[in-house]
Image (cartoon, rainbow, N blue to C red; front, side, top):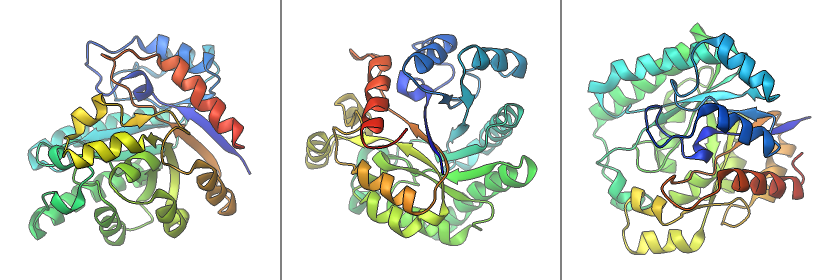
Length: 297
């Protein structure tokens, strides 16, 4: 049984393909390898080259395997459906070209939800009709990834979107066929949302196909909840901390995965604000060393 640890371009501040602050994609590959990782995610489609030959050569140069890719799009906005479909097909094609397996679906940040990140009792809810259409859009992209491209598709709850809090995630899991939709479980976002990641994993480990390892600074979390701080400001205050420095119980996370016979990749996501004084390669190395210290190899 093998659990492998990878990293993702978001650990270098890459959230959107066209952000002028992004580091060069080749430098991210080099940093990832230099920090001791053997796998990396695609990042937002269009950030890395969509020509398979170019990316394959660069991955081979750094002895990196492509793990998966994320469709981080506005599922909550019906006017953005064409954009969601475009990102789904382009990401899936890239993953298939490189033998990567994991297509991750994330409802992007909503202006209606960002002010209440981490506060489920205050967050605006969709009515029945809006939820049904939203659910169906997620289900259709899951079907595309699973049936048209042969990928393993996971839903990823994310702060400040409409798939944020545990009841929403559970509702979706109950309404979409497990054959096409698994879970990409992000430990940090689950904690930020105000729920216990370990308890959720114990209930749903059989549906978890892929993991994102992220930690949450409990002091920052307490402050942003108390002060009703919005998502973007919370990020700037450092709510996402290095693994092992926050409130996620990673030794227990590891044991749950081992007990379930989980095999495959777990990807570190040390989300960072590139405008701050950060050293992504040092954080990446520290996160890998922490995981190794608790038994991940």
